[in-house]
Image 1: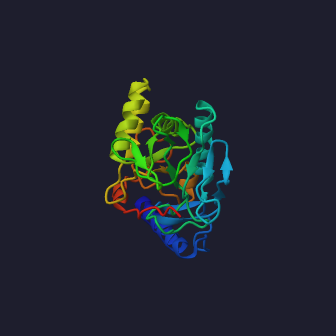
Image 2 (image 1 turned 120 degrees about the horizontal axis):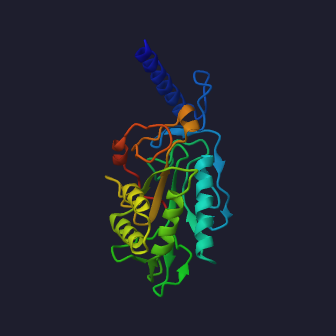
Image 3 (image 1 turned 60 degrees about the vertical axis):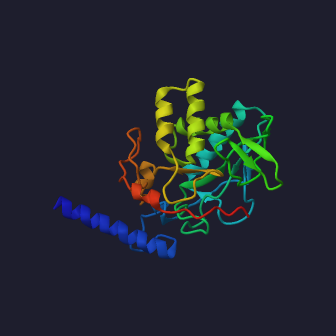
Amino acid sequence: MKSRTARIGAMSIMVAVTQLSCLGSPTPLAPGVAGSVGLPHHGVLTTPKEIPVRGQGYVRYRPHGDRNFGTRTLVSAIERAAKRVTNEFHDSPPLVVGDLSARSGGRISGHASHRTGRDVDLLYYATTLELVPISSPGFVHFGADTLARKPDGSYICLDIPRQWALIRALLTDRDVEVLWMFVSRDIEAFLIDYGRSIGEPPELLLKAERVLHQPRDSANHDDHLHLRVACTNEESVMGCESGGPNWPWLRSFEVADDTDALAQPEEPVQSN
């Protein structure tokens, strides 16, 4: 009887998510389903929070448009992390925040995920060749030598200390749980090596090694960091599905290990 009830409950959620995917809002069949609903690559968003155009330590890449919405958990985490970085590196140019989700979630061009308000693209921090921090010039590709060529032909460097500070801020934030930080393998290696070189705690380095990842069958993420956060307990009750993996340090409900989601290709990010 118990297993039958569980199956019925699971089927109800599936029906609700299907309805939400079509309508973009709760239906009479699932009036209690709301917020971040479904999986990052197959779901919708209700009760969205728009990230302000600018705040302490960050600025939006797109001042206008319908791609600046997320869950309150994600938006607040971005704001806190950016503030911590700018407090650590005084007068630092701001973090540039790229696409989150549409106001109602669902598919947006240029992305296979970003559908439920729990994904965001964060442009990499950069410096001049003389290691002077500068504002991000946009989606430029950093190579294995940490250099990137700007549209005008000049070169800049990946700002590894500030980038690591951002990762540390997100991974040590008690009010959000990180599922993934998609980055290129080369950038991951530089960041982990830097964390070791400054004596970061082993448990923090372990988390970073797990969540920093170059996804399969997708862009290699050498021009931005793609952050994905887990569902909170409250969001899980309302229909949110984290999509895995079930990291041992997660405090929220256990989530299905849907690592096949990593194979979902993300189309190239549009820089206009």
